[in-house]
Picture 1 (cartoon, protein in one colour):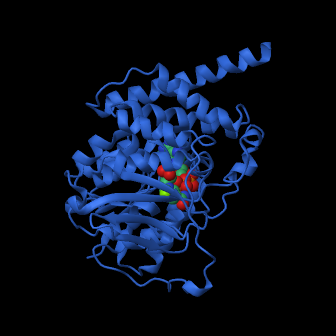
Picture 2 (spheres, rainbow, N blue to C red):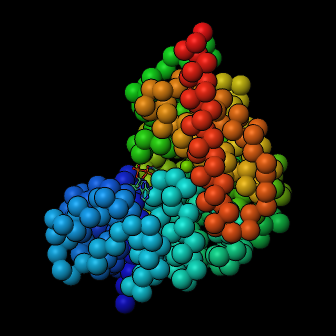
Length: 395
Ligand code: NAD
Ligand code: MG
């Protein structure tokens, strides 16, 4: 019998790549659930194609609209409201939950799926950044052994494939590659004037807006260091970042004897998704690029002066407890404000730094405590942005 798959965030960029791979798998996986935030018309189109048993629409207003419009037909359970995502993630029909939601909004669903015994294919890195301890515990501790949490994020997926169950003690160091984003060569003084349009023009990957801005600030790589810490159980001083503008090498593992392994491929999220949906087997996929056709591969050190989010995230990860959740929430709100043209690009890092300074770190004991921290940090970020905006307009 084929596995039942729930795709959370089905209307997004990861959702589309995941459904492409399901189509390639020709019936070896059945789509049993799909979710969206508010774009229910798009979700209805996907449901007509994939015929899931249930869908979830997280936004309540959108859920009511969809129900009133009879958008899904009688055979589909249409869940909505605050518990819709967790209910869908724990549904009986589901064996695997692919989480492609953006932001901390994905955490509760990751936990619900793991607690219900599902395997989770995780693109939503914020689940691990905000609730790493809880997620790892719910997935049964050692993730390499349990096979309950499979990384979709390309760098982590590459490293997971390279490690392939070998003992953690054999790893000296893990290296995540970063494209460097659209501003890799832009001088510091110009960064205050870059526009959302420029920031959204990613040089190599085609992704949703939030992660694209995170790639421009390098916050994405900072979040990924925290993600790697939880996935691979290594301390922060053994997690490195290198800028590799071509995005062909996705991740590297240095073994204790100094051997350095790399995984290479085109920047296309369908590749890591193939590896997790077919796991523990490998499915057919397109041929690898001919190395002779590839442009030169180059590597350079990240510039943490121009891109302070990288060091801020690393420090937040090291300090642990509720601190990474605060960094994540401040960053989510700062990205929104930048996209709304309410703050300048360098203020994304500025706001994160100031909100982190006002936070009193605590140990993480429950999802409720994390969600409370997340809510506080969002409010604090908006408050600080408004205060600074007022001060600037008085000058
Ligand atoms: P996206 O913006 O394209 O899609 C996000 C999806 O989440 C949409 O379906 C949206 O309806 C849903 N969503 C948004 N807010 C929600 C909320 N509050 N509650 C419930 N659902 C909500 O984003 P994306 O680029 O597909 O990224 C999704 C996740 O995958 C992010 O965590 C991102 O960091 C990670 N990721 C993405 C890529 C990529 O190539 N796009 C690569 C690596 C990791
Ligand atoms: Mg990544």
